[in-house]
Image (tube, rainbow, N blue to C red; front, top):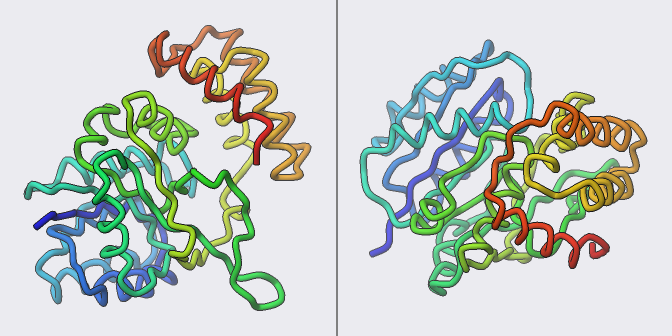
Length: 281
């Protein structure tokens, strides 16, 4: 029987964490290991984790020291990589989940079913958020073939082939592009809806927009496609601030000649892929 394990980086999630853990522990399929990483929290997060660890023998809790800022990108990936290093049991699939989610019933079973196709390397459901009028819906439109960073699942072969996760802003785009580069497909299960309790817009900042632009440079987008990507982000987010700071981050990469995070051949693949998709939703 195919097995899976989960790594969850957590920073100051005392309000959402109990709901998340309850939704995980009530699934009809349970992981070999659930690694919970307390990433420099200063609230009751770790206590909640330890309480669940006492009641569930598949849960293990570790502490990871990083910045105190609630920041997407390198912070969360470094915490995940730390958690991944703590896995002790072999598994066929690895999940990277956020702690501000509520999983629907049979979530893991449906994800595992999708992996029955060996060409699939990354799978996930979709995130829905609570709107101002009190209804749940997809308030953050993304590409139909993009799995959001908060609910990634990888076949272990795909994960190893792409070299693991890269601790950079835009990591959850890089992983999918590299999966495509190595011949894997990305599968979004649009009927599998996961409640996201913390709205995406609440965690982004000027700094993250700047880092997004830097990521376009580091992924070898080139100046033209990089600029178009910044403009596309502006259209989606409806934020002049994002446009300004992402363009500044892109330019900064060229001025400082920062290191790239993909090879030249991967960069060529990325540019071709992005050129085809840049005007698509």
